[in-house]
Image (tube, rainbow, N blue to C red; front, top):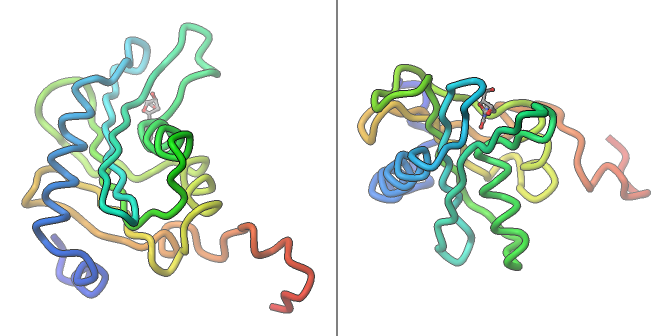
Length: 156
Ligand code: THU
């Protein structure tokens, strides 16, 4: 982990971060990605301590493909969860070895913005349980547009 990221990491215990990364690595094994050959796994931590896993699921028509992060979010949401603390994401071209940090795409960041506080929600991108970065949603989606923008009294 890079030194400058540690200030954001201390809200989550290292043990929790590593548990989420391990779950994301397991989820990645279920990736259905015969077109891009890019495999992604995600593990979402709910406020009540559940870990919900997701993988990317592609489609011959390309458009209906779904990212790992949204798979995890939609699974969790459809089971009634509404509060989330963190998500770990691992992605790399096909194969066992993780060769890069896989940052959530813009669409997934916007989905997170709908349900998560950008200052609090933690996004962990990892290449192993020992090599990761922790960022807030606000760092990845500055000045994001969310449900609060639709409230009439907002004045900033
Ligand atoms: N993908 C994800 O699952 N998450 C990301 O954050 C980036 C991209 C997937 C979508 C597609 O199946 C493959 O990776 C290549 O874009």
